[in-house]
Image (cartoon, rainbow, N blue to C red):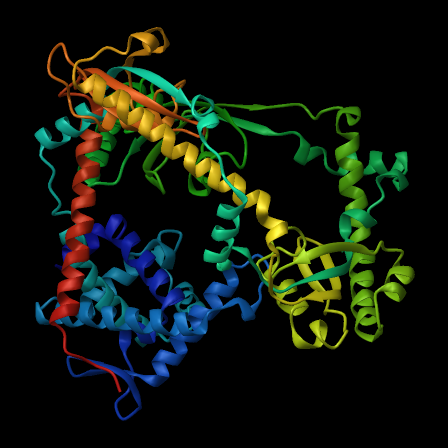
Length: 616
């Protein structure tokens, strides 16, 4: 086992272990894996092993921090603490069942094996050799001690052995993949007959009594939530920046300072993509061996790459500058010399081997072409300090003022208005939950105070106040009568349309002709599932109908916005499948991967159901 670890530490296993460690620690924390100390209050017991309150609260805090970090504007008030606590507890219980299962199966690593794994992991190396200072610094950055880290690796490694084994056990037969691909590539020929709403609209009438009855029977449809009319001030960096105030001399100096950045370098690359799957490591090794033996990169891309579009072009992806590819791909590409091939690079799409074909640098565009952009950039840079000062002043003035008039005059801001702001507002700036929550707080809603300063966007701040509060109420009948009449009319038109379509459909199924409307049928030949030019609802009906007998048709209906469409399916053509195509092999691998994921999910669920779980 020790030799296996050494052989694989540089490859997929090491990456998975480190990745899982980082995810587990950043989301659930150290205690989610190691467990607590005996004698402490527990929040749950799994098969006799406690999950302590201390570890639970620590992980809850870590999860709160993680969710806050994902917010564009961090606001702890938006967190659902009850949901966080519940999700953390369930995750801790599931993690404990997996650790216990691995232990019961006798999967473990010795101290020597842990040491071998740690010393071979690239993140802990300097110039290809294990560096203890690098290792200790890395572990401390995770908020752990060395002993804790070793224990985490021991348990996570064996848990991952089970996970990997189950995920890779998923099977998909070639025949099943062929049938699915044939269905995916299937085409259908059909006719459609549109029965438009205006053909039955004259048959529909809605009386005032019916409108009133509907109003009385559905009062909840006409309830208005409480809402406010608000005034607000907006302070933004963009408004403070004045491009026109930038002198030509300053602009030219800024242009010269940016010259190196403006001369964009583009790199022409080709790649071989190996998608994730149970045979990915073998296929990748085959490609690397053949490259080492001198075989053509272009030929291998055509044979092996799961990016079939570029593969047909020898893996060619053309020229690209920065911020085009995923960060790992871009970092590797811009570190290569022309003609050099990278080591395996992992992205969300799979594993890449990258070849740099050529490099070109575009000249710096003339100042005239960039003048507007650079003036704006420089103006915003200079306005940033003024914005910070104005933001502080606005916060202080709004806190002390009885209304928004004084802050508006002091900072030369316009008082803006927005009526009927609800707690679920969607119009800017009241689409920001923090601002709305303050607007409906007791001090602002009933006390007449201004809100605090709220950052609603990137360098955009808002202060607001309530001008008028409209309590929840029900709209009067006269206010909604036209809407009710329109809704009832539309409903009855749809009913008449369906009745008309059903009548025509019955006639067609009985073999009768629809002579009067025969000229209105529209024919579609050999349409695919993703065909353009056909309403998606019609296409969905056409592909849901049973295969018709030879010389006959299958019939159905599809509702569009203002019509019912009869669909007569006349022919089904199965898609052609090349048994040796990369598309088929990729689909088979994808199905196998999904099956493995389902099996692992079922395995986790089985462990959970078999476990004895006690909660105080």
